[in-house]
Every structure is written in structure tokens, then in C-alpha cells.
Amino acid sequence: MKVETFLFGSVDVNPEQVIEFPAGLLSFENNKRFMLIHETESGDPVSFTLQSLDDPHLALQIIDPAALGFTYELALTDAETAAIKLTDPADAVVVLVLFKQEGKATAGMGANLRAPLVVNTKARLGLQKLLTKVRPNVVLSNLSSAA
Image (tube, rainbow, N blue to C red; front, side, top):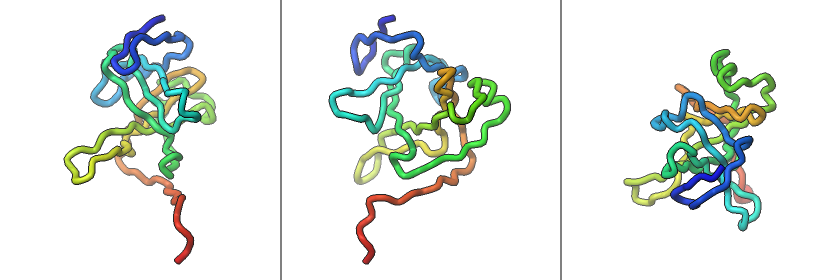
């Protein structure tokens, strides 16, 4: 199927590659169907675009938390596990939504650590897990040598 998008123009979408979020996403509850897009010219992508198939103007940048030095160990409820038909934890992937930081002296990008997306890669179903407490395992890398 062809989908018109704001950022990428007309895009061919294989229905078997659609990721569905049955409950939608926080503040975007009416957007349930998404596809992943990344620019192929720049080698292996660090971040991806999660393009809504329900609203051509909605595109979210997502990133693997490991690229930012975070790992998550999330506990899903039975209802959450059932909602994304997750039977094998190895089929789950966790990603963070990036956002533009405004109003600070130096604008930049931030990641929503309190509401990661969990996607069952086999069933192509996902949810947004709202966390009351974030206890990420932070791995510091790219540090200069010991002083």
C-alpha cells in the first residue's frame, strides 16, 4: 500500500511490516498503525523514524536506549503481555522516543526515559510503558583516560 507522509513523501508500505499500537501512544491515542523508516545513505542508523500510517504529519524519532548508555529491565503486567501477544521475552525490543528540548540556553534532543515503547517484533504489536520510577542501568562510555 502507498502512504503519503509529511517528511518522506509517498512511501510504499508492506502490510506485513506495520507495527500496531492497540492503545495508541501517549497524546497520540488515535494513531495505532506505524512503520519504521531510516535513511539508507548513512550506513547503520542510530535512530529511526516511527511514521504514523494514520496521520501523515506524525513522525517520531526513536532510538535504542543502549545507544544512549541505558538498559531497561521492564516488568510487563499480564494484561500488557497479552496486549502485545508476547510469549518469548527475546521477541521484545525497547526503544525511546526522542524529543526536541526547547526553552533552554542550548536547545538539543532528549529521550523520554519514563515512557519507553515495547514492541513484540514477531507479532508486530507494541505499547508505551509508563514508568513511575526510572532506575536505568547507566553505562558510561567514551570517557577519557583516568586522571
